Image (cartoon, rainbow, N blue to C red; front, side, top):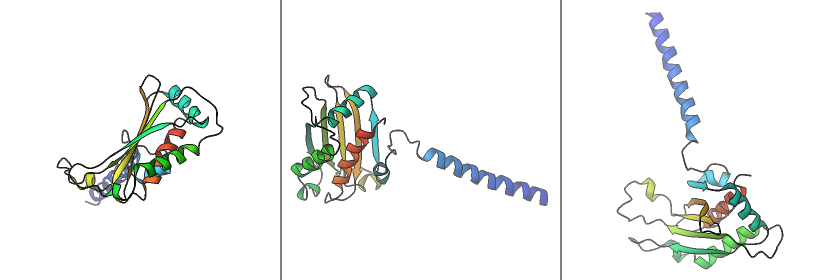
Length: 185
């Protein structure tokens, strides 16, 4: 009887040790989830690069002062906007421009520019398609995209922000820019 009890305990402990090792190893392997930088680990973030050569070239363009971009906001459809009563597109544009300027090494006249764009999405918590509480926790997200001269996406990233007044949008914007500038480096 003691022999069976001993075997049972060993198997039981082995199972839990193996399960915890497997859980720990597979935790960061979720496809699409970005975990390279500390800012990506604080909230949900997704990152994808499509062309390493083009990404490196676009990073150099930013380092040389080519920082033109377009932007927009997406307000909720099923509820009244809370976020955009506290923050404007002009304010987020200034945050985005400042985040890009931190990466300029020197200014150079350059005729070629890749298309950079970002948008701020406010989470529509009353959207009937959002069925889980998890989908209603975040306040919104910032999406950053870079396209080459042929209008082909070479990099795209999304980072959530949590405050409905937008106090953490600056962190979200800085995260997408830093993520892009450190991609494949």
